[in-house]
Image (tube, rainbow, N blue to C red; front, top):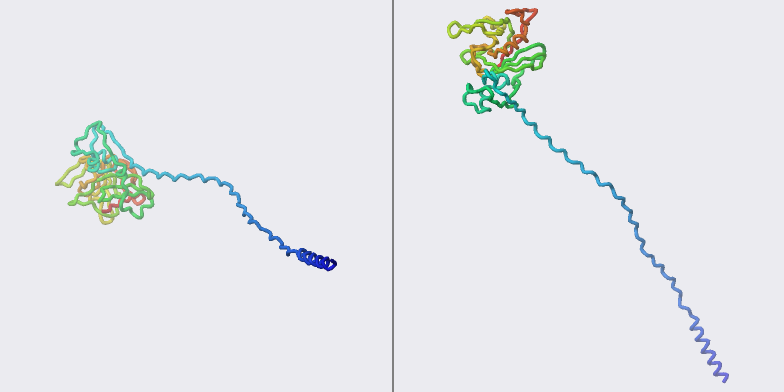
Length: 265
C-alpha cells in the first residue's frame, strides 16, 4: 500500500514539474501603423485677370479732299491750287477732256498726292530764303531757314529751250515786263518777273521766274527757259523773296542780295 502511494506521489510530482514549465513569453511586436503624410492645404489663388490684347490700330485712311467747281474755274487752276498735276486730277475724276468741267461739279483729290516733297533736297538749305526748282518733277519749293514753306507746280523750259541748271540769285524784280524773242512771241505786261543770274549767266539773258497768263498747263514744260508760275503763286514768291520789293522795279545789291535760286534736273 505504501509502495503504491509512493508511486502515485512520484507520478503527481513529475506531472506538476511538466505543467510548471511556462512557454517563453514572446513580447508582442508593436504594430506600427503607417502614418499619413499630412497634405498641405492649398489656398485658392486668385484667378489672374486676362489682359485683353490691344486691338490693332486701323491703318490711317488717306485724306480725300473734294472740291466743288466754281464759275470761271479751270482744271489747271484747280490742280495747281491743290498741288497735283492736271493729268492726275483728270484721271482721278475720269475726265476725258480737261476743258469740259462745269460749276457745281464735285472733283475728288487724293490725299497722298497733295504736297509733294523735294526728291533731291539741297544740302545747304539751312539759313535764309532759298528757292528750289526741280525740273523732272516740274515743282518749285520755297524754303526759309531749312523749313519748307510752300510748294508750287510750274512749267520750265521745253527741250529746245531748256531752263539753265545751277545756283543763281534773283538780280532784279519787275512788277510787269514785256517779253519777246523778236521772232516767235511777244508777251506784254508779264506780271511778277524775277530775273535771276550768276557769274556765268547774266540776268540780261532773260531767265526768270514769273507769272503766266497765256497757259494753265502747269506741270508740263512750256517755256523758252523761264520758270512759269500761276499769277497768284508768282505774286507770293515775288513779295516773299529778296530783295524786298520797293516800287515797280527792285534791284539786288551787295547789301541786300537777292534770294538764292537752285535749279536742279
